[in-house]
Image (cartoon, rainbow, N blue to C red; front, side):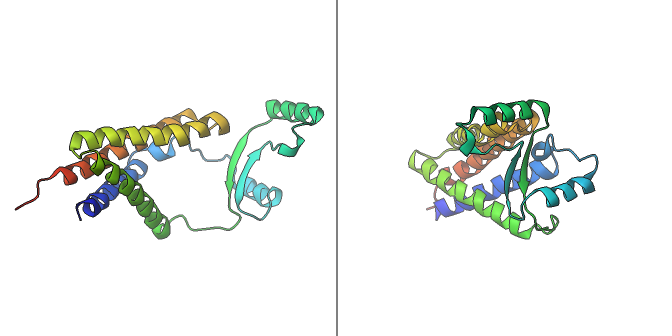
Length: 189
């Protein structure tokens, strides 16, 4: 029961920190910009992309053409003289203000992550300092293994990437403190 409660309150702490980071602080939206002319861009996406959800990188290179030196040279020249875009595309619309399913999915994801964290923390001796230290380490590891590669390979802006470092590191340290506190409480006799 101690692990279950530590998981639930740690998951809630991580979830609430994430909500605060996105709704009050600018961490989740750093470097996000509005297009100059949204309607023509949306029309171009509908016309130029297939009607299937996916990730599209522009300019695009067909990996099967890696052996073709002329195709590589043409692609290289095209990438130097054109804009770059990493597009997460869904052809069907969805109301972003109807956040119920996304919020539930985020809470579930946070709580499952904290469950694994809590099991490790419990195994190695729970305390608030140990929870903060382990949580901070996990947050930085998550950032290094996910956000930094997106910055490195897909040109995510440095400010966006740095914002996620703050979000992940602090969020996991906070969840670790809460879980460590609960697990280290003395049982009442």
